[in-house]
Length: 194
Image (cartoon, rainbow, N blue to C red; front, side, top):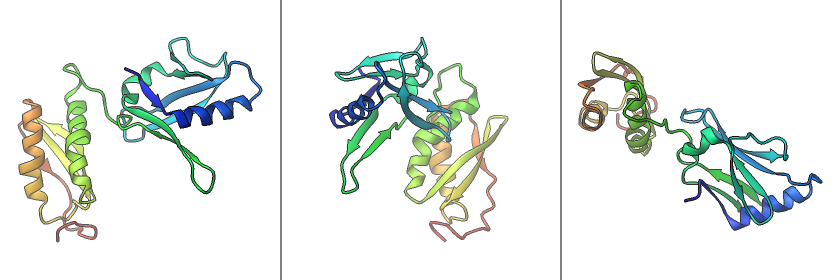
């Protein structure tokens, strides 16, 4: 399995860009800044032969080499680099659906595990209503949450909290005994249901 997919169109575009650099052996380096956080950014940069990190994973393509930053690898799973043409010329895009997901395992802190399920299972559902929830704290097994966007002030927030979020977190994490909402729901400006 490849760490990242670089489509044929993107390979052709990158090969052309690299050929104009007049640097023998130049390739690209792909990495993520602040991986596993909401601020994660997937980056692609030129990489001269001396610039790569010895731990980088190397992927050889027909016309260039891609060096993949080792700590970024788990977050680049299912990532795709593509190039699409349009009337302005074209655009290189990088889609890395796992870049912002915290990586968790059995030894991870409970807070990381709760954030993982919030990002992977709960917020994608809330996003359809323009909302999201974030973890404020964990107090004696109670996850303290704050709603935002379309969930703040929403008339269905209690139902979402108890029937959706609490059930999901308690199913996934036996250490969680319940959830509590600390959102100020008097602000209803963006509420999905009023």
